[in-house]
Image (cartoon, rainbow, N blue to C red; front, side, top):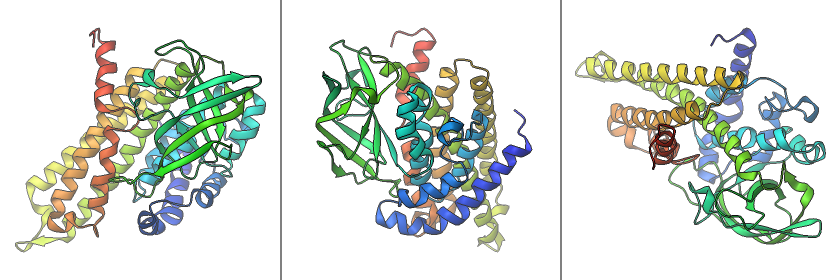
Length: 381
């Protein structure tokens, strides 16, 4: 895929935002266990980062998916992975269904402020007993006149503490399995909605993650995104975009880590010579960089197929699986090559290792990615 001057301009814009608006504050936000989304998101919105592909009439840029790929890759250069993850939730996980399937009125009420950074959004699918197995979710929305009355719990919700609204997947009929679910926009200020706890995580600590409780939360039926009963199918579409954006971002994260480690090896002297002169270290980083190049090429192929209107489920799944595993390998190697100082919390490698571990769990665990691919290959698993 050949990128244009417009793509390069966006890359430089995102790089400047990361350098000036995010990285100088990472230590403070990590210590606080959250970043101020209501302060940062409006600044991101000023350069179009929260609605690159969303409709112009709602404040979006109306760009094609290749610009999302470039933006996500550059966001990977953030010095704490929790912040680009939260941005991805806003731009590529909680809002695509609303942009694609929502009524004009619903988009105006919820998508427009999300694109402007005036409202923080979250995606609420996972539950205490239903994570990778979406068919097992129990949160129910019962019709009462012109309202849904919603009861249930949602777990591991990124942006959940700060969210102004959530894109909620709930059961809206007694049909079992994957049938009878709907996506519903639920404002968090609605009576009966509460954050039961903020979760304490191994990594991605600058991104708030919550458990949510819905106790007979009443919202209008008009808050339904798309067709009632088609929520699972719409959410699967949204998951594909989520997995692509994760793979794009991981290319940037790996590039950053390998670049910083090369610089360290050139500066650090052992036995009178720079560590970079050790053949094994040089070859190992080069090998990992080559694997990042392969992932980048795969991402470009995925993006091209998506732009052509093709089903990219397999491509996105392969990308997500490969990216998560590669990130873990890069993180471990970079820490190892820093030696003892790499194991210290004062060094970026410690946080990078902790943050990167989520990539093979969130957005579909490696095992689920393998199950999807195995079924596509004809295995009855």
